[in-house]
Length: 287
Image (cartoon, rainbow, N blue to C red; front, top):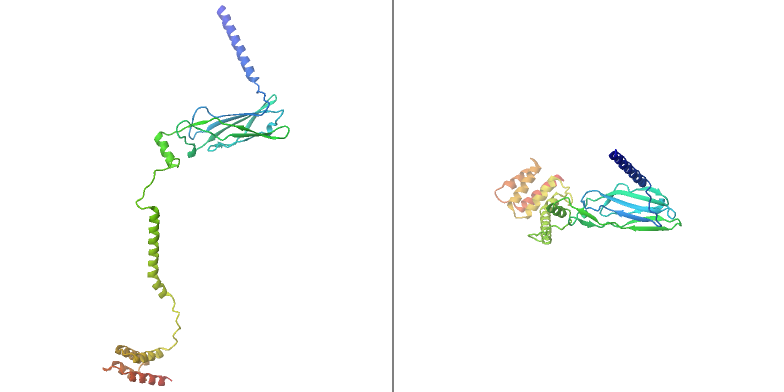
């Protein structure tokens, strides 16, 4: 009986303490403040590169002197960025309002790679802007604790990643020929190739262009007579015979054609006087 009574008494005491703790938790009150106060916190343990970083900012606002609706959080987290929308949850208790900001940061850029495991990052301070009941604008600077970051890679992998992304400079390159000298040589070679192409193509292009000389409107017979007259002035026997044969073919079978043919194929060289006389006879017969 005694043991049963002691057990019941202990149970009653435990229930009493439990109910008191619950009531105390429900009756928890915010700290009364005279001015706006802000507290920022980051994870106390190192976070790994690429993981989301949970952020907490608590702003206590005295409603007697500051309207909580005028409170604004202005913060940048370079090189990190906030995930999603930054909004506050409001809790009112007595004359104090608590604005709780809960969000996460992330960074996958090379700037966020730690120099070594546990290297701290210092984020830019945040600003809490608000307006007092008197209408004046105020700002409160909130500093962040250091953020320790660890790499998810081994030392060798981390070094390779830094080199590939330009975090550390790549090894120096050497050249058999200086790039500046090579560029000058290539430019000179290109110029020489261009000049050679112009020299080869220019005559062909000029030959393909239409002749700008005056069009010869003489008949074939007139040109044949001119050829005989010019050949008679020269001393080339072969040229004389060719011009006379051309004239004979142009005259056909009549007129002075037999005379022209005889002179063209005679054993002796056609004389100048004979050729000139032949031209005059043909011209008289044509006119």
